[in-house]
Image (cartoon, rainbow, N blue to C red; front, side, top):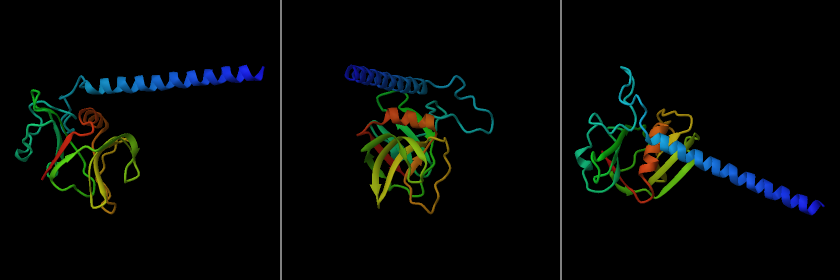
Length: 189
């Protein structure tokens, strides 16, 4: 009698685990779909507050001249501390633009390719992060974009060599959806 009961219990637990996995995946898909929708009050931030994230409207900062090109790409300006998601096949070609907080070390200007992505992990600063999109390693420092799970975008501790370029969680989702492995990343001065 124990044999069939154990088998039934095992099958029941397996089925429950599968249902839970599918529910988590469905919830994640719904989260990405809703994150792609602009909030109803986008563009109507109160005076003195930061500009809305992922704004591709005419008020988005202009793309630096040094970032011109004809390929799908993420442009990161070191001086402006801005990221642009550029798709020259669409109108407007700037699909989103948002401010970022750089790590304590900057990558050299140049053209790179997204080589690794992770849905979540721990940053060099010890914070839990999500939407990790890595594009180069230089001098033992890994450079990539990510969002802190706690929502913080505080500047990196200058005593710790970090190449994590942070943005808020909504912008993290936007960049994650835009830049799969192989996407060009253009770093400009």
